[in-house]
Amino acid sequence: MNLKEYVAGRLAGITPLEKNDILGLLALPPTDDMGDLAFPCFALAKTFRKAPPMIAAELAASYAPDEWVEKAEAVGGYLNFYFKREAVAKSVISDVLSKGKAYGTDTLGENKTVLVEYSSPNIAKPFHVGHLYSTAVGNALANIYEALGYNVQRLNHLGDWGTQFGKLICAYKRWGDKETIEKDPINELLKIYVRFHNEAEEDPALEDEARHYFKLLEEGDEEATALWTWFREVSLREFKSTYDRLGIAFDSYNGEAFYGDKMAAVVDELKEKDLLVESEGAQIVDLSDEGLPPCLLLKSDGATIYATRDVTAALYRKQHYDFYKNIYVVGLPQSLHFKQIFAVLKKMGYDCADDCVHVGFGTVKLSDGKLSTRGGKVVLLEDVLKESVARTEAKIREAGIVTEDVEEISEKIGVGAVLYAFLHNSREKDIVFSWEDMLDFEGESAPYVQYSYARGKSILRRAEESGKLPESFCVTDEEYALIKALDGLNAAIRDSAEKNEPFVVNRYVTNLARCFNKFYNTSSILKEEGDVRAFRLALCEAACIGIQNALGLLGIQTVEQM
RNA sequence: GCCUGCAUAGUUAAAUGGAUAUAACAACCCCCUCCUAAGGGGUAGUUACAGGUUCGAUUCCUGUUGCGGGUACCA
Image (tube, rainbow, N blue to C red; front, side, top):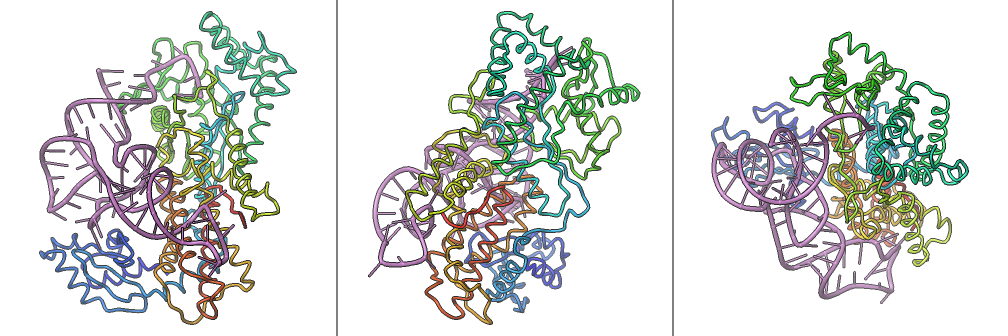
C-alpha cells in the first residue's frame, strides 16, 4: 500500500490541485510526533487568498478519517496525517515477509540496459585505496540499478593502453628481470616504472624512447605486444583476487586496448564529418561553441589518446548494448574530459551522448597529501582489508560468542567495514585516509549494521517458531518507527539511483539498524507470549530482511552471529 | 589568467526552497541478576562574510574571503 499516493488521491478530491502536484508537495514531518506525512499548504495560499494555517485548518476539518488515516491535524501551515499504526504495520510487515529477498526491488527498469563502467585500474600499477572509491561506488550503483529491474552490464575499462606502456617496455628492456617479475608482478613492475620516472628527470631522452615503444606497440610490433600481453595477464591475476574478496565480478574486462583497432574508423568518421581540425600539429575537435576547450584526438605524431579511445568505446557500446544509460564512475578531476567527449559525440550526431553520465567521485588522500603511485606513496587495498579483517577477528575472539567460522565471519565484517567507509558520504567528498577512522567500528559503520542483524537473527533462532502476524495488536513508538523505516527501502533505492548516490542506501540501512536497536532495547520478545510475541517476532524477521537486502546493495554481507 | 567545485557543532558529515538544521566520532553523565554493551538513554555544542530574491534561504542569485580540481599531445 502506497500511503503517499493514497493520501494524495484523497487530497486531490478536496483541493484544486492535481494528484501529481500533491505527490510532489507531500513530505515527511521532521519528527515522529508530528505525524507520518505532511502536506504544506503554502502553495494554496495564493489561489485561496488565505493564510496557510487557515487553509490547513479547513482541510483538516474536511478530511474525514478513513481506513488508513487516523486523523489529519493542522499545525501551522501544515496538514499532518497520522496513520493507523496497526493497519500500516500489517501492510508493511506482511509485504516484507512475503517478498523476502525481493523486498525493495522494482520493475522500473525492465528491458532497459544500464552500463556501469567502474574500477578500471591501470595494468602494472598497484590496486590501492584510491581505486576502491570507483570500485565500491560503481558496484553499489550496479546493484542498485539491478534491484530496480534494469539489465546491468558491469564494465571494467582496464587502463591497459597508452604511453605508460611505452614507458614500461622501455623500463623493462633496460632494468627488468623476468623471474623477479613473475614472483611479485605488480610490485616489481612498479619498481621499474618508478625508476623510469626518476631517471627520465635526469635524461629527458627516455621520454622519447618511451613514446617510440608505444608507437611500436600501436603498430603491432611482435616483441612489444608480447611484453604488453604478459604485463596485462600477471596484473589481472592479482586484481581478480582482490575482486573476489570484495565479492565483485565484471561482465567485461574490455579495456582501452580493446578499442585499439576500432579507433581508425571513428577517426575516419570524424574526418568525413569535417570535425577534425589541425592545431599545433595535432588533430582536434573545436568545441568553442559549447564553451569548452578543444578536444585533442590525434597527437602530433599521429598516435591516439584517451579521448579517442573513450569516444570509440562509447560508440561501440551504443552499438553493442544499445544502452539506456551509460555511466562512467571515474574521478572528479576528469569532469572536463567527459564533457568534451560527450560534446564530440553530440557533434558527430549521436543523441546517445545525452544518455552518458559521468558519475564523479572525490579523491582519496593521505593526511600528508595525495596518494602517488610514482612517488611510491601508496596504501594498498589488500593491506587495508588485511588489517581490517585482523582487527575484527581479534575482537570476535575476545568476545567469545562466535565459536565456529570465525575467519569467514571476520572476513565479511572486515571487508564490509572498508566498503561502508567508502559509501557513507556523498561520493563527491574527498576521503582523507586514516587507519584510525577506517577501523573505527563504533557508531555508523558496517559492523554497527551487521551487529543489529546478528542480534535479530539470534532472537529468531532462539524463538524456534517463525513470526506470524496476529489478528490485532498494539504498536509502540519504537515499533512504529522501525516499521516506517522498513517501508522506505524502495524509495531509498529509487532516490539513490536517481542521484547516482549509493550513500542514500547506506544512510537508509544505518537508520534502519538504529531503529532496530531502539526497538531491541525497549521491547523484549522472547519473554513475551501470545500476540505480542508473535507480532514482535514478525517485525524482527522483517527488519532482518530489510537490513540484509539493503546491505547487499552496497556489496556488504551479513553474518548470523558476531 | 580562464573554467570549475567546495565552505554546516571540536572533528567527519546529512538536510526535494519549508516546521525546533540532523547523525556519528571526540567530551561529560547514566543503563549488563534483562533476547549479544560492536548496543541504548541523557547533557553540551553548528550554517565562512556582505548583500539580494522569497510568505519562508544551509539550499537560489551577486560580490568578498579561504581551500581544492582542471586548463590539449598522461589517464
